[in-house]
Picture 1 (tube, one colour):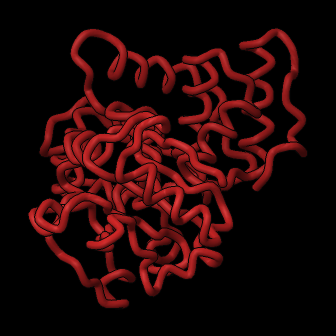
Picture 2 (cartoon, rainbow, N blue to C red):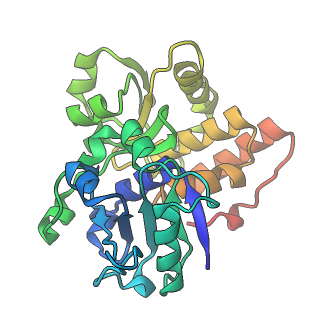
Length: 298
């Protein structure tokens, strides 16, 4: 039986993952289970959360009829505020049921439960219970959260949505695209322009230190200004600067930063020129080459 706790940011990023369509449009990607009371669930729950029934006689949770646990990539459970595996809480009891009935991966429990998640991401609360397939396909995912509450990675389309800026309290931007974004100019936020093309010979290394310093200033000094780093599609040009920031800010090797970012954003992909320049940057920071480019998984 395998159970594990995850921070709320992990669930946020599960709900944000997307390629052409949101990952959550695939019913095998995420099974999100709410094991609070029916009254609490009806009042509000995490978007896509499913209510788990209790057997009135045994007071044990019932396995959802459509769980198909053996097919689910991520099984996530939350209750009101559980944060300890030793607790005899609804979340732990429900997670054990899922683990014992065929979950192919460790069952994940949200640390702090609904109370903590909804406090951090109130815009992901809902009363909606049933989602049609076309609704799942058309969900607009939020930018990926790299540093909780502080640093986000996204696309031009996401950076052009007023509700995204409002919900995430974005106050600064690193714009890695040549495309115009009139809304950003109207907001009057802090802005760093790094027009970047996804080409092998595009020189990005000269701007790594500048990008890292700008991001660090926004999210570390005094009043935090949540920062969105974005490019056309959020797949290549913005991730390269995020990686440079993580390496510089947290003294990480390229491999370590790559692994950390991959946990947030499964689909980023850097061309060989970008990877080589990050390797050169790593050598400058660390005094030696730490990462074999071939060890970085696409």
